[in-house]
Length: 634
Image 1: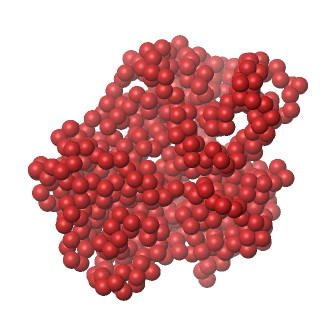
Image 2: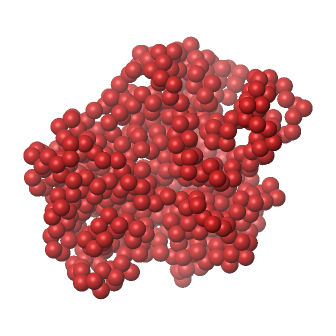
Image 3: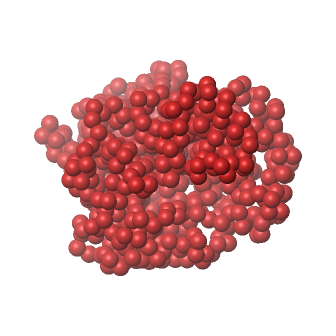
């Protein structure tokens, strides 16, 4: 696990400032504290920060192929590298190291851009082919590892594992992307391929970028993999019963190779508990596990984690975090480099901090909810779709739109309809409805929040366009499958994986995600919706298959999540900070907000009229970013 960075002059004429390159690379030194390395050539510079995991001393980067034709910087792990080594050796390729990095080099020499199809793992890499004067950049299929890039006005491409590498360049354009603010206040993050900055991008998951010297602009990235949505037949109950645990165990097994201490997060939820159960069955010694607890019972899951730890006799460590653990608020903007509104970033940071005291690699359970329909919102979305299917869209818009305005006088309605957002959603198509249900500030709320000037500057753009773009591929699927796919393309990569990557790498901890193994995804996405949501239970097939391996209370308790009490903070210790920050001169002069709406959100929350905690946290994270960055106003 590492951090990568680089400069490439498209013309090949610019000289590279070695000191600047090193300063940019060192902005992400937390990603790789064990070593750094550089390669410089005319119009080319590659940088690397290393966290040693495999072949601790023998795989320095940047790394050249044995024939010196190519050079690579790489962040991640290739889990099938040993099998690929043997395949490539049989074709005559030489290897000078025992790690996985050299496998990428020889795979490129043999298969070119098709090499990405051979790689099983999490990765982001940049490879320079001296013979072809070509830069090849690729990101793993699910977006576990990040990759940022920008083309400067001077004609230099700069890239890095974190945005702070790019912003460290004095010529980086800090102009904010106008539509990214709309996206952020809907989703709580800026979705791929954009960043908060107009001229900086994230390489989307499952994409590569091939840049040849002499180009005057960057080509469009090419998608090489996507969640398989055009399968001919769903899995049968027998296939799920016979295959799920076996395939999950194999995905866990290949992620347990490391030359450093290895363990797992154990939250007490189904997914992390399932991963720990598989690990315990795959090794003789006890698994190292860790959990974060809270001193407020409503947020504390450690008792469930302890049940799993006791069952498998793990080396379990727990630390309790105070409900007033808000010291990280200002650090989060610096950690994520752009606005990021998931408050569970705080406990995620703490559990990574705890894990790093004992291990260098930790396995997590991320991805299970998206793959097996575990979120409660999937069940609600499915119920809504049944109503949508009975009435034409035009009629639904005319009926349910006005009904939403009557909320909360809906006691007569079925329980699942007793929400304003549900009535709004019933007047929309499937994709629009799901976007509405997951938005932090929904469309009409953003209209109140934003100034008229900013709304006009959007020229009709709305955040739902992100979902519509992805939704085009899955129109033929049922509503729940559509929602799962949309989450994999947006929420999973933009929120969950971003949170874990930055929090873990802040502590130089590598996190591996077996439930997001692409082969497991390709199989698991074919589990039918009526097997995933059955008898009112989400993730039903997954839980059923885990029954021999986990306690009943862990499998079938109410999902808690990794929450923090932000609403209480804003009425107490963060109240003054809230007023000072959100009503600051910078926020008012940014041009994005209606000042009276900001004040009303705070006043209503502090006085107890309404719980606006989630809205206020989203705003506070934006204000913190604006204050710490060179962010432009409209």
